[in-house]
Image 1: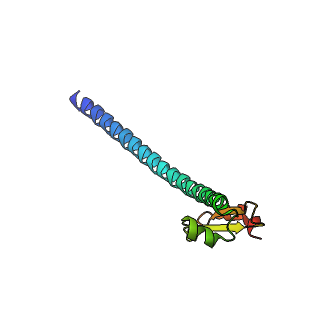
Image 2 (image 1 turned 90 degrees about the vertical axis):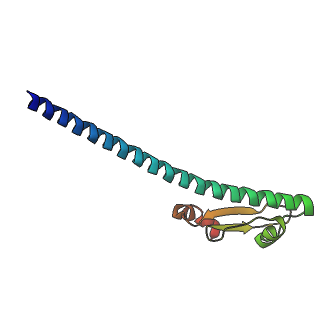
Image 3 (image 1 turned 180 degrees about the horizontal axis):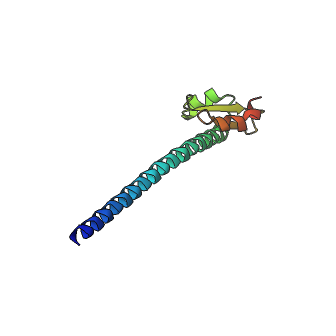
Length: 122
């Protein structure tokens, strides 16, 4: 009888260990998935922040100088906007000095972003 009880306890211990290992593996997978979502969300947020800061700087230039900046270089030199050119490409097109320029930021690390905005570059 004791031998049967020992085998039963050994089987229960093995099952408990496997359940614990499976639970731990699931938790690790969820943590990794969460980190990947945070990373992709922060990339989109960086693009949005850059585009918003460029627009605000252009509006500030218009309010101070009476005209929108003629180039992106003027905007970055005089209004403190910093562009990470390895990560983002900026399309800045101005029609007239009193009309808000067309500002498009493209995330170079996200190929779908380039395809969606290809018409802007042509």
